[in-house]
Picture 1 (cartoon, helix red, strand yellow):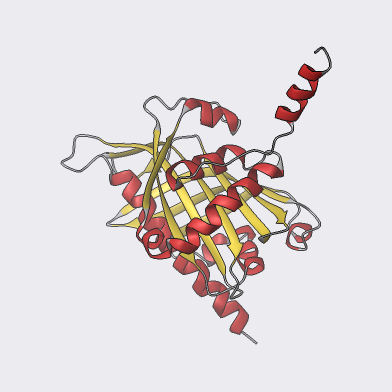
Picture 2 (cartoon, rainbow, N blue to C red; picture 1 turned 60 degrees about the horizontal axis):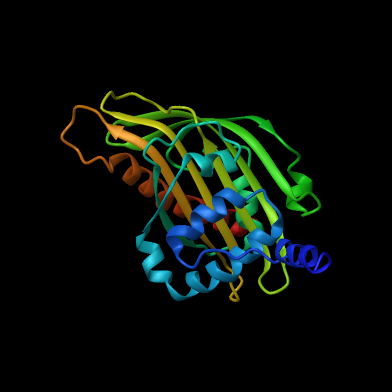
Length: 260
């Protein structure tokens, strides 16, 4: 008996992690485990890739996903409170280029050359990029400042960190997981819209046809102040930005491949 109990505990401790079954919870799971043991990402891939393949049309329209809690932020080493939960949505993005190209674009230092909404962009800190693109470094981490025009005369200034990570899967090939942390308030040129914090998580894999498929979730803690607008305005702006950014990135990468 004294031998059996420790062995049972050891067996439970070594049991592979299991990801959630729903897209609403899968994206939070990915966000919290992006930098953890790769077994978590492999478990996520086993659930998320079949979902992406079966729900491509629905993902292109977008899903509401579970809110981030203070505990979720702490798991990502963010010291911020999610008073009522940070609300989120996920969108599917299906590229014309392969996974390596997407990694090149997301890690590219002059992001204002890619994204039409970026007025100014500066990467203030960055880990080595060349070895990341060669997949001899598993991660690429950066801290950036951006000034963007969101349309309708709305401009924003923001600082965020980004971490890209390669994970190898025997079943699904090379995977790319991306986490963006923006725990500080976004500055706007308008008074009625406030964003206190925002975050995102992306899961990218290469489909059998050779093109990259990506699902990205964004979470926004925002509010509309003294204006006759829905409280979801900040999140909707984020969703629109995700879709437009995916189109900009794809077009830029295709043009880069086609250039002599």
